[in-house]
Length: 162
Ligand code: ADP
Image 1 (cartoon, rainbow, N blue to C red):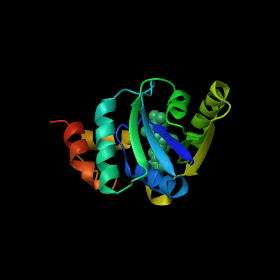
Image 2: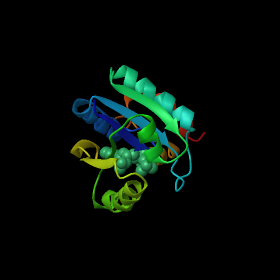
Image 3: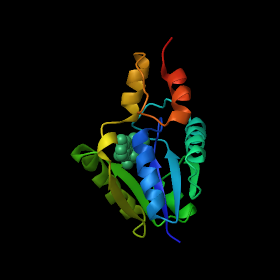
Image 4: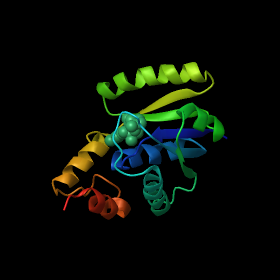
């Protein structure tokens, strides 16, 4: 049984994230979506709120081999706890890879048994980021097609300034 940890801050979860998750589900026996705090980023939704939004999408998509959990500590700790053989990350371009490589090296240093694997973003979603979604909401623009439909309203209501 090979389980992957799809780790990220998912603040909030986008169509780009969902695309990677769907493809991972076809590749692994099980996928754990690990919702983590990125200390370099200001939080928009709490860890609990992000998990609830992702669970709503997982249910609507009928992704039965997915579990969603929040974690306050190191990514490798969560991977060990949930029995994940690898950490999965999505890559939109060279800039993402520049960010990912030192992270991978650090995670390997922490646990040499846990490998990081990458999936390239699919072309239709490669331009999507959580921060772009938040920025569009802040200016009252539509986020249709950028985030999964079941959670679009929740995200727009929260991030749109009144
Ligand atoms: P983090 O703060 O840990 O980078 P993110 O929520 O920004 O978390 O992203 C989680 C993972 O999903 C990262 O590997 C990121 O590169 C990837 N990702 C983000 N947006 C997309 C996208 N549009 N398509 C594919 N992968 C993406």
